[in-house]
Amino acid sequence: MRTPAGTECNFYYEDFHRGRNVQECRVPKSTQSAIWKPEHCAKCPIPAILRANASPHLHLELTIKQTMLGFGRKMQVKAWCNRHDVRIEDPYIGCPECNNERPGLNLFAEALDDD
Image (cartoon, rainbow, N blue to C red):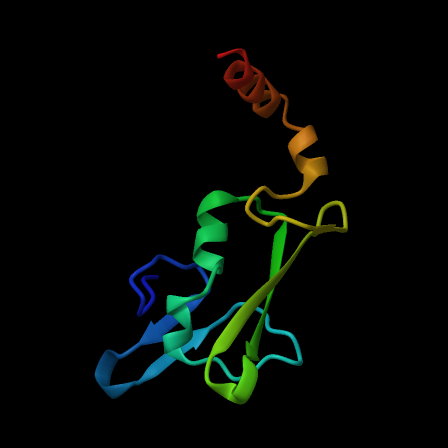
């Protein structure tokens, strides 16, 4: 669904049908996370991560933290692979073990290196 910031995100949900006023982010959030508001979608990295990595085994957790003096918000994303139970350092690239299991991906990377 399209977020208030204009990007597509699988975790965003809104319903304004027949007088309803529901906007929510359905990504799992940590216990230390601040309350989500629709304006957080503008700085959220999750839509870009989902565009870069479409792995069905990718699990994301969002933490919204206040910056110094509480004037802004910082979005932190933790990612891990449910299949290999590995923490993912760069969620844009994905799980290194899942990437090694796909031989077509290696052929593509080798073709790029030859040029």
